[in-house]
Length: 97
Image (cartoon, rainbow, N blue to C red; front, side):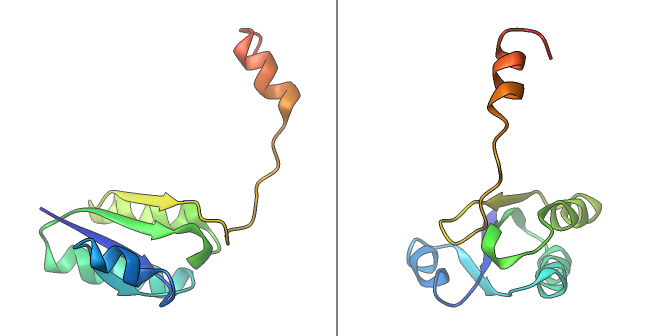
């Protein structure tokens, strides 16, 4: 089985050097189209998508599920940070939520 990596031209060469199939695509529509091509080719066990290459990671993961291709959206230093609610995390850790 093969692994595909979807992202921008600056970050793909590193993973291409590790033997992954690299697909250049930036933006939700381009990434979804790349997933469709990979699914139609077959033989891929996983598609890794750089988070900074998409606007709506949940949409991309949902499309992967629909196509039967597992998608891992990989956070990168260039991806927008998500706020962390420390109170909520602490409550959950203590069994209150």
